[in-house]
Image 1: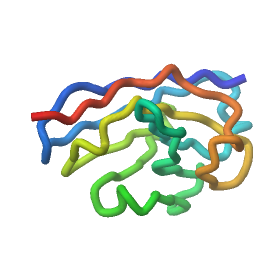
Image 2: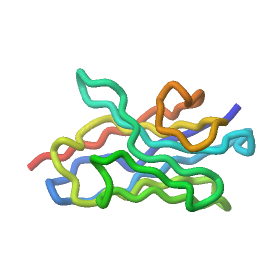
Image 3: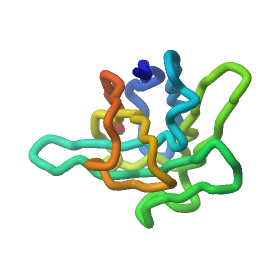
Image 4: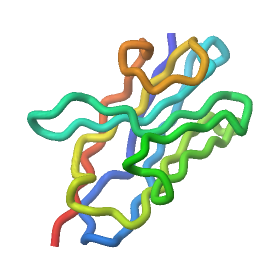
Length: 123
């Protein structure tokens, strides 16, 4: 079993930046991929980015390409999501999750989830 704790959310103005962190612990060696997801009110959970244990196996959804960067500190068992040029449509609860499968952004493929952290972009 793997545990995940997401943190780093907050309130920023349009054009601002945030860095989210996902601290992982437990049986992390069984999980090949960590993903970031977001869910806005009334909308389905959306895969944002994922990273495998072996870089450069990194993927982003089109809406965040060029603005978000996922990275991993294996020594500290932490996955980051650097979010730049944030816009109001990025407002959502952001979750990190783990899967034993190969690199994927499908929510159904992820069996372990963090609690989520709120990201709000507003002027």
